[in-house]
Image 1 (cartoon, protein in one colour):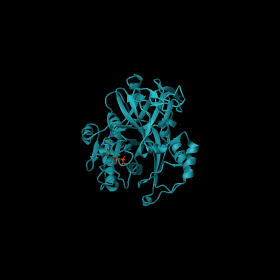
Image 2 (image 1 turned 135 degrees about the horizontal axis):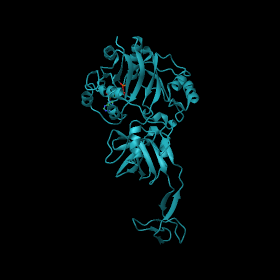
Image 3 (image 1 turned 180 degrees about the vertical axis):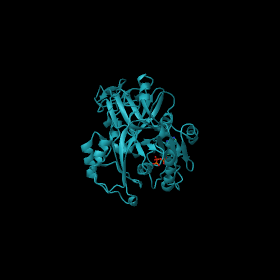
Image 4 (image 1 turned 90 degrees about the vertical axis):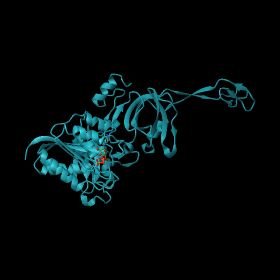
Length: 431
Ligand code: ATP
């Protein structure tokens, strides 16, 4: 067997009723090691969270290996044929093996934009050693992006997987031990427990092989938290280096009409008072550059909606979220300023002291009791509850890619963003 360095990428193997590409990746890593090859790194690569084809969290995986690339490619093909949910109409696996890391542009497009299968098929031949798509081969997009991925920022996730014979049984994980594991390892781990929900958020509710996942800032912290968790015996576990929690999906909005399916960071002003609509979603209009868009905090964002409700026209914000159906779905906001908000109300009648009412559009005010008229409204200032700073959705509503505040921000310095984008920001092109 040859002993050379190569990368392998894999995507689109699961279906809503089972399987998970990370499980297949962990199984592949286990078999590769058992065959005497060396695993250098294991990556869990989240891609554009708005892609409609995704089964759950739009994840692909890549492994960096020292060993035999030809043998591993054949091995991966046979594992995919054995385990992927090929009968599901939306499952279209892709496998990529490359001796060098191809240019990262393809990754950046897949994490923040929209790619086509044809794009992947024309990119791959000149950059990789082997690739194989099954059915439509849509998974080639994610597999290629995973192999090309660069992480200017990264976090870690330990995924514990179930024994295959337990896949369809209810998960047995001791909730108190999860909370304790986060209490003890925080701030080095996060999103195990949601204090607002008073429950764990690291256990999937879908019938896939994942038992739970622990997110953190190093392999040691996730492993430390893992050591405290009481649960059914996992069949295997894998620590993944990941772009989760890095905001890699956010694109600075520059100009023109925002595009559906892209996640933006936009700077601008609140232009209408937030209103609560059907289903408890809270929305307001927001002006950025020359466009006015609708921003929405959806019901699952729970207490974050109270923050949004306290915004007022004129507040200057950075808003982050995915733009879908002409609406920005808020993930977090930074409030630059929340000045006292002045409101015009009908004045008290100067004759009888009763509150006057509007006399009609641009006609001033009149007193219903004594008939007196007045032109000037009373100006009152609403005291503000919100202060400058970052506000984010709770763990239970957070997108995988969204950077949690627990990882630290020093706004408005955008240094928390991937280097290539902070350059643009620092040049002032987007402020
Ligand atoms: P799995 O665990 O199987 O990876 P998932 O929720 O991650 O499940 P997939 O079933 O992989 O979702 O489906 C996502 C599909 O979308 C994949 O075929 C992937 O190649 C493709 N895809 C990912 N990112 C993009 C993108 N930016 N543009 C177009 N297609 C994309």
